Image 1 (cartoon, rainbow, N blue to C red):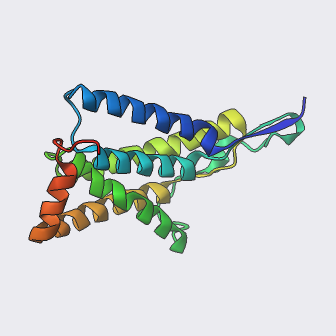
Image 2 (cartoon, rainbow, N blue to C red):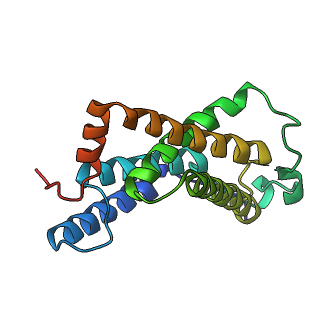
Length: 186
């Protein structure tokens, strides 16, 4: 049977955001431990994660029969670093800047090294998921070591931006207000 089916981002990420909002609201009302940052920081983080998922995984096309891509999955992997590096790496750097900025706000004891490691592992998770999507659904995304490098660099730059922002008293105070767990839902 020949088919092609498109799963739009909103069909998956919309309900996921709704569930997150409900869980966050319940946890906030119960003053549950384990949440760092106020509602604004958590909301921004959830929206950022949704945007990244939307850009990297969706729309998800599922192909079958004659429509299915018959190319081997191994051909989807670009394992040689910087072989095909060009200006197209810039959006990946930009995409992970907020992650490098947000992680230390969410986890105040996280170091630069752990922030960069977390960004690298999250990027690796994205690349592996894209490969699994290709294997399972014949989805056409490539897996590229350059994406991993660019994303990790973006996380490092985001961390550097946060460190620079914390040097000024006014931005440091604003960042403390945003990351304070004592905020209330207005």
